[in-house]
Length: 497
Image (cartoon, rainbow, N blue to C red; front, side):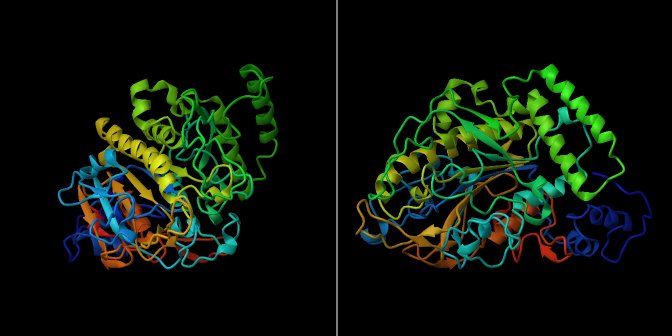
């Protein structure tokens, strides 16, 4: 980090003016001088900048807290349900029996059992940004101006301020989304709001990968009136599957590398003729153009997505499912230099299949489809990062937009748990978080927060802090209106080692 030379005169709190300038000069998202002065003498900077990169796993549709990290073995049957609790690697802390592999690695995790917010909706954009409220009418409008930037896009924007200029062929994407553009593989609804850069500009959206491969298994229906069954890659995929970068991952069939180079030289000549028109729009165009060129020409970028380079036993441990291979690709990407990877388990085939949105057929889907795929992938990712020496400075977040009702609805075939945001669970690992900790608790039925309520905005603030970004920083839109990057979130030091 840059050190500023200057006066050694000490301030009344013992800091030198040089230290104050050093801390306060971290840039747009770095600590302001006022905040630096207030933090440097206390313990609030604990963990600041510990994480060098982040992998965010998002279980769209909303995973049940009861069937993941907060089972209720002493609750009545209509609360506890068919899946029981089993001991975990944290003494006295059970998790759901559907996660036997995850139960063995909880000593690497921080489990939060007291997530809460006011919106029991598929509010992905709310869960992933600082926006203070949410309504369903913006859910299908990812470019609506009311949206705030995704916290991964804000991190990308921050990193872009200090990124060294390099040739396009050497460029590695800072922020990648897997396994495809969010919710793009459904027949009956377009892409959904959430993981986008909003007014920061589309150059700070994730660079989306695209899955190519054959699915091998029919997923259990989520609704029994569902007219069509789907062979779902989240259930099982052919081992020959692969990922490419969407829209820029390969040359057209009739374009060789030499031919492409000639086209690129011609384009450069046209660009040189308009150098005087240096507008913001054209700078954005050039940035996107360079990104696309690098995806085409850089072997290292393509190789980072190539999960076939991993050993067969390791790929098997992650699971031959779309989520499993996506998590493996995420590990390869961060190892290659990508700083933020977003992995979504979203709907496939029909939006109303809902991924983790189990309004019907809850137990068949949890037992046969959702929990086995998640258990293999999540546990393998944590252990793989640890074995490669990456876990300590890689923050892993496992999130949903909300939880599910404590009371089981027995009327639908296969039972149901419906939307619930009063309390739910998530897990963190690495990057400066505690190992083997449980933060917060729900009441005896998993229906409300019993202590230590934590909001999605608190998770964003804590993530920024761990990534070395001042969580109290403010960004401005095109009208120069201020937006706090973590909304009203606060750093939760309960989560930090």
